[in-house]
Length: 101
Image (cartoon, rainbow, N blue to C red; front, side):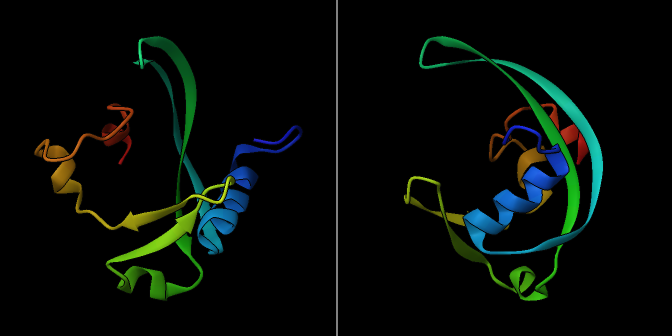
């Protein structure tokens, strides 16, 4: 998040920067305080959760697509059914996120 930026504007900017997509109908769903341990270090974050839609509907037709981190490292994005997370096939972090979905 950049100084002076709202979380909804950050979401729009980050989605555009990382996967080259514009989003619309952005609606706040909730916030989660997450205390966690990573590599032995205690961490804390506040997660803002939004519902939104892609402007380009073709993103919904792709089983996967690529994005790029700020440092240039590429990553692959996959669509997953919510049942995969409910059945604990895939861990969703933070765990409280499933309740908002």
